[in-house]
Image (cartoon, rainbow, N blue to C red; front, side, top):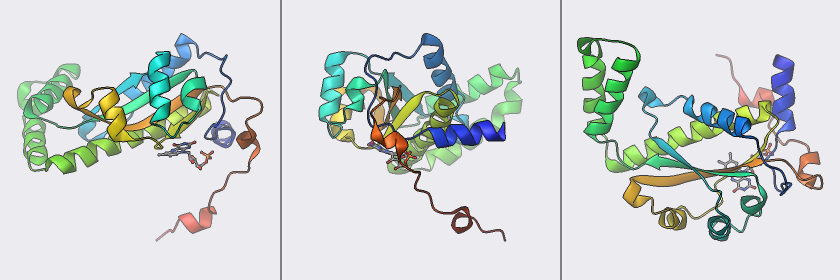
Length: 211
Ligand SMILES: Cc1cc2nc3c(=O)[nH]c(=O)nc-3n(C[C@H](O)[C@H](O)[C@H](O)COP(=O)(O)O)c2cc1C
């Protein structure tokens, strides 16, 4: 198990060139979706939404606002990770309701959590909420990258795009969303030279301190 995880994490790399003929199976895509669904988030709020971009014209438009990165065209799948711009009371109530109903709880058992959510999140500014929600997208990204490595699916996390232009392209403001990240999935091209580069990582002993 430990060996498998380390091998997978060393195998993965931010793929620069994909095999454009390769298509993920429905099962692989569904596993990636489950990984994203099961990603942890603060209070379990999952303030996220994902778009799969399949339309070729849309991919061309996306590439133009994403530093012309060719992965957007050639990867089997292109995922946009978006965060909600607001967490209004109705969303918080819906979350508490879902928790109560999923776990078969009585309303009084959830009341404390419900009130805490409304109180704590109600005190946050809109900017704080947006930053906080965006962080949840990074957690989901980390999880799906790990999952894809274990499934031997190549992936590229991307921040190299204009979020403003992407928000306009997908009309995200109206949907109460902001784009945070792009992640592409597929199969590395045989001639992607990046797959042969050594991993550049700081030594473990410079990353950890035991106190
Ligand atoms: C949040 C984030 C944004 C990134 N944005 C891009 C990007 O726009 N294009 C790209 O080719 N790689 C991007 N990368 C990949 C990193 O450059 C890469 O993960 C890092 O250099 C370590 O290399 P490795 O992932 O191949 O081990 C991004 C990585 C992360 C985590």
